[in-house]
Image (cartoon, rainbow, N blue to C red; front, side, top):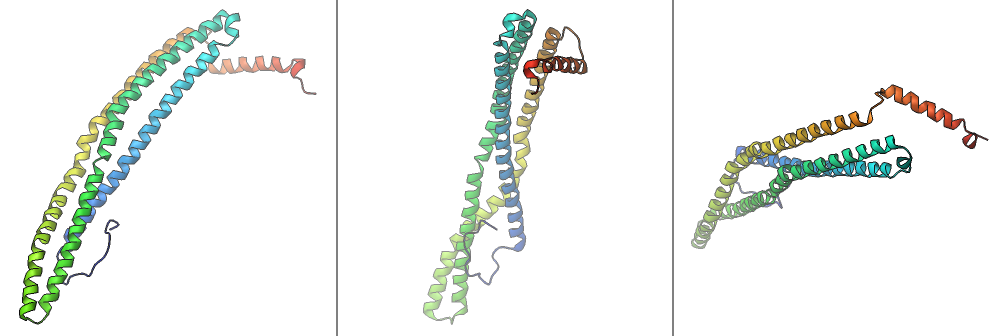
Length: 253
């Protein structure tokens, strides 16, 4: 595993079963992927809301520019249309800001808080790994004395090594058991944690687009007095452009 800091001499006695190690690696791998996914989602949500705000601010700027066009001073109908557009864009921007604020509180902030838990989890895994390395080192030391001739000094050192090993072994077993118990619980808790956030995201989007439908329906009623289709408007625009191209001041030399 990538988080193992170093290698030491392996004791002959297998102190952690392969099944336990596989279970541990499987659960930790799932949490590493969850951490990466949470960070990516948090980043993407921030980008999305920033893009939303930029879009509505740009729309307000465009409508303001159109409203300040000199044509508004010359054509009352155009002035009324641009005033209606400007009002609609400002309403859209206001509702968009409310939507983004809601998403910030109910989705982005919870994602950030959730991501903040992983450093503590990773530290607990590192402490467990360090405890395992200490356990292996001392178990190897005990085995070394067990293989020597049973002289008085050797037996004293063997006793000391076993006494040194005992609290280290217990410390590892506690850390290992705690992580094996709690990592699956933490992983499965993600559903209960995120479900309210994603429900709030859907509600915010539904409310926003419901309001947008109302705003643009009202805007259509205000400015679409001629009742022309898009195709008719396109033909009308092309006809006007053809008239402009026929003027001598824009004719090709």
